[in-house]
Amino acid sequence: QVQLVESGGGLVQAGGSLRLSCAASGRIFRVNYMGWYRQAPGNQRELVAGFTRSGSTNYADSVKGRFTISRDNAENTVTLQMNSLKPEDTAVYYCNAQIVPTGILISSDYWGQGTQVTVSS
Image 1 (spheres, rainbow, N blue to C red):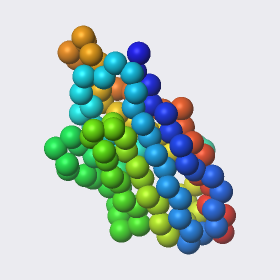
Image 2 (cartoon, rainbow, N blue to C red):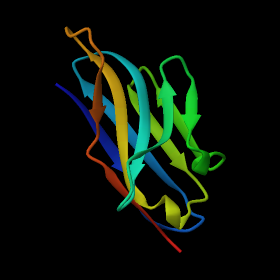
Image 3 (spheres, rainbow, N blue to C red):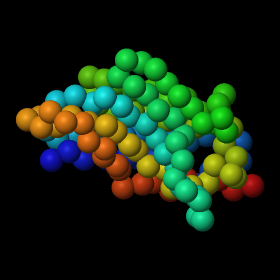
């Protein structure tokens, strides 16, 4: 059984900062990718930032220069540091990972339960 557990999030004023963390646990052979998505009411889920095992990162244009993703391969964790937050960053943030479980040599997509980020103006 593989699961992603998120922490962080909350309410912050515009211009403030928040930090999201996600830890993958269970019978994990390899984590290929970890990243963060978000979904605001009435919108589709969108990529915020991602981090491959090789070290490549990608960011949504709307968060470049404000958000920073980091990853600890040994601990199977990913962190999203969010600075200069704007009201339009308000959404439920989901951790996503592509994981190869032990004994099942096929990569599958896993999602966290989501954490609310609210930025007040």
